[in-house]
Amino acid sequence: MSKFKNASDAKDSHIKTLRIVILALFILCLYLGYGWSKSPEKLTVHVPPDLRAGSTRLWWDIPPENVYGFALYLFTQINRWPSNGEVDYKNNINAYQHFITPKCKAVLEDDYETRSYAGELRNRVRGVYEILGRGYADNPTHRVKQLDRNTWQVNLDLNADEYYLSEPVKRAVARYPLRIIRFDTDPERNPYGLMLDCFITTPQKLEIPEGK
Image (tube, rainbow, N blue to C red; front, side, top):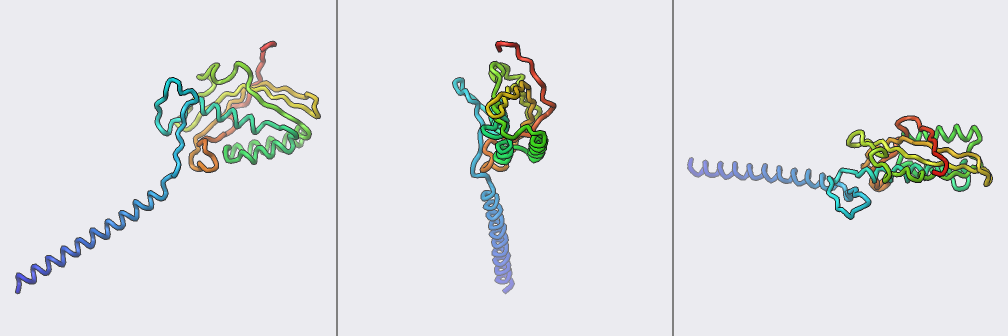
């Protein structure tokens, strides 16, 4: 009788152990399933524009030429007023708000209000473009400086021409030292994984020799 009872107790203990293991495996599967559901569906990998020589990079690394291209495109688009600066500038800030930090958006909105109050926007048309011979390819180490893994300084040398009712009123030639940061938490709205954080230092006026 004692032998039968011991065998029965051992069997019950074994069944209890199996139930605990099954429950633990079930909880583990739930945890793994939750982690899988939260993993990103898309992964952005940055590659340099010129692939003739090939390229090997870590998936999180962003080539400096890509950072420069992002900064140039975004900054010139925000500051381009094709028909009326009073409307276009404000629309640009809102249209590209997912590519600029909240701090930078506040800076741009303050600049808009200041210019609007001074009468520098109404019926103004503005074009912004890179100065010939002052692009990334001409001096890459000077154009992009990586400050840390997630931050870059991009120096843009740009020409800005403004017109009032087709009459030229202003030409600004300046270097804009921009801060670009990594931001890859919302790939649906910002597939670049980068954001403009406005200026690192005050923009500097440039003197371009005649004929350049």
